[in-house]
Structures are given as structure tokens and as C-alpha cells.
Amino acid sequence: MTTGGSQIPAGRPPGPRDAVERPRAGASAKPRSEPAPRPAPAPSDEERTRPPSLGGGEPAQGRALGRQGQRTVRKLLEAGLVEFDERGFQAVRVDDVVRRASTSHGTFYLYFSNKDDLFKTLLRDALDAMQVITEEFPVVTRNESGRTALRHWVHRFCDVYAAHATVIRILSQADVVAEEVYGDGLQMLFRLAEAITQGMTAGAGAGAAADPSAPQPNDGSGARSEHAELTAVACLMMLERVNYLFSVEVRLPRAEMEDRLSAIMYAAFHLA
Image (cartoon, rainbow, N blue to C red; front, side, top):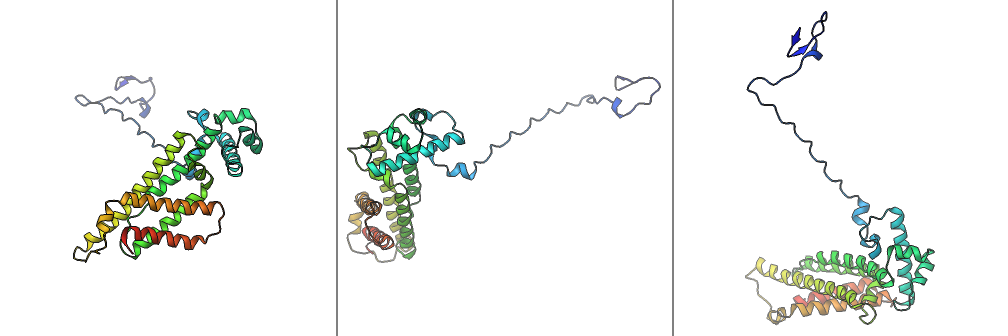
């Protein structure tokens, strides 16, 4: 006996396992759907906050570093940072770094080409942090909320500078670091000055657009807006130099200095 084209053993009634499904005449078989690709796992909090420097220098690029490798890189970076801070960039040797890190020259060269490569790796963290606060520069309107936003940003800038003070101090010495490295810092400086220019001048425009009938101050601010980029660079240089003094432990009241810095920047564009 057969059912649906399958042979059924004699002496046993057909059961569900004996049935073979076949498409009906004229019906097309449904194509098998491919399983949906699994979404890539979201980066963990640790991965999102991991500093760029933990990837190591030139010899480590192109290979994934495990936790042990990252720990070694961190130890060498911390040792190098202390040496740069205590001795100055020019006086530091690889010997000094490996001695402080309690590791070998062979281990050092697994992750960094030389002292300059170690410094450039530290610089990646500083430039990354500066890029973040560059993108955070607010639109500073001509009111109290604008002043408050600017004061908060100045405070953030001071925090970032303090976290990377040794590297930024060395970077400011054009005769010490390589031209390529100094150029990276200079580009970041101009990006930050551009952000300040846009945030301060956009705030003035936003205030005028909100109330076109409001009297505009006859104080020459229109002429000054033609040189807004130079004003931003001047404000940024002032901000950097004050933070340099903080970093070399000159005793200045930081909170009061932040108040004055933000007030001067506000006045430079808005004539408070």
C-alpha cells in the first residue's frame, strides 16, 4: 500500500510519519527564507571609554591587543608620562621608561618604535579629548544662559588641559617635538578657534534674529566681527596660558580665574 508515493509496510495502518508532503499541482513551493543576520554587538562601556593610546604605537598597529597587551601598553605610557614630566622630553631615553615600567627593551619595542612614537601615542589621547570639547562648544547667546554655557565650557576645557597637561606643554615647544607632531597640535588649535568663532558669533546672530526690533549697540562690534577668528585665537591663547600656569603649580584661584576667563571671552565678542 502506498500513500503520497511512499511505501507502507504491510500489516500496519498508515500514520503521520508515513505521509510525505508534496506541493499541490499548480502551487509553487515557498522559498526558504534566509535567517536574518545577527546585529553586531554594541560596544561595551569599557570599549566606548577606552583611550586611543591603548592600541599602542606603530609596531602594535594592525593587530588586536588583548587585556595583557593593553595592560603593558598602559604601564609603559604611564612610565613615559612621568619621565616626560620630571625630566623633559629631550632628556628622556627609552632606558628611563623601561626602568620605571619594570619591563624590558624587547617588550617596549613590541609596542613602540622609539621615544617619539611613545609621545605621539600619548598625544592621541590629548587630541581626542580636545576634539570632544571642540565639538561641545556652545552657541553663546547674549543673555544669562549664554554666559552660563560659556562658563561651563571653560571649566570643561580646564579639566581636559589638567588631564593632559604634560603632553600639551611639550606640544607647545615647537623646537622640541617633530614638525609632524607640532602640526597635529596646530591643526587642533585652529579647529578649536573656529568652533569658538562659530559659537560666539552664532549666538549674537541668534539674539538679533529673535528680536530684530531690539536696538543694536553702536560699539563697533560689526567691525570686530570681521576679525572674529583673530579674536577667537587670542581668547584661546589666553585660556591656554592660564592653564599652563595651573599645570606648573602656580597658585591661582582656579574657580575665580575661570569666572574671569569666561567673562573676558564673552566681552570680547558681545561687549558685556
